[in-house]
Length: 421
Image (cartoon, rainbow, N blue to C red; front, top):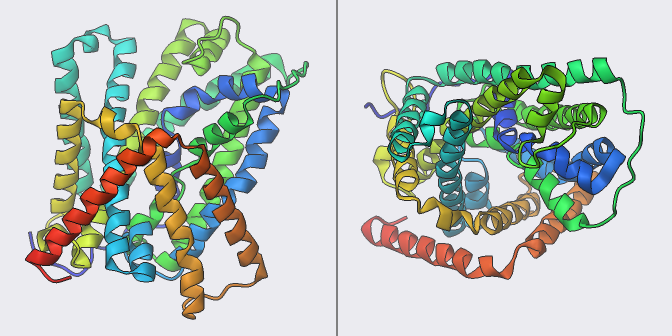
């Protein structure tokens, strides 16, 4: 591995949008239609589009921050720039800890989808071997080149969205637009809002790989806006088709499979199962491409050992950072400790986003970004929205989150002793 300043900028606007889209669309889309229909009735497509306006506020703040930087790191970099090295370290630590847990958990989900088609994957030993093999495969793809990783995302995205769109279009063609209107129950507003907040989360992942994006200050901003619009339209279309199909005997855990069965019989179930496998896989791949860049960025800033910022002379990627990321994921997945970490991921993520929101007014006061009254309104809405989300988190998550904060503080203090920051 040779030391280089930065990897090549090989990601254009389509690739940046693709990273964001696959970070948002994972396994959740396969359970979302039934849950939303139960809570909001025939208003579900409109609720999805309306919530996109609310979700746009924090996304726009992140997008606005991205226009001030052309380096990798995303929220970690913004926090470090606005609030100092300790805050930057903690944000990076929070992001990595919750993301690593999510990746380990989702590999178990991915193999569960495989087992739904091929029951042999239910064997415990084969299950763990398959998880380890998949993590090695994703790590290898991420190492051998950013362009190849984006290519793999294109293929996976086509294989996950193709079956979903086919079933939705066939269902609408056969049944027409919904002819009956189901009134919502008007209960559980908080749970519906949290569900949609989760469904829209992850749309700013391209900020983390900004150092490898062409014309990053403009491209990353546009990728966040374009992705939000695409996600809103896609979710609303799938919801509309689901209501039109109106499958009977719905499996609440797999409503799209029930819709597929209503349209194409057992082949529809197979199509949705294949889509679920590739949807979870491309979701994982987006994070394997992006999240190691936080390790890379923190190393560049002197917050982590310098070997993590080394770029492979052969592949042009931060191979050491990717290897470390994949290694931790496999350890968590094999040990099962990701389940403990996953119990407080929501609190960590919400706190991280809330802190980053405050980076924008700090940079405005320094004269580093220009903000008009429209951006002031967007910022207030974004902060209020995230404060409300944080209030919905159970108090049981507070102590584990505090523990992660203390561990991060200890790691930061240790790093300062070994190497002045």
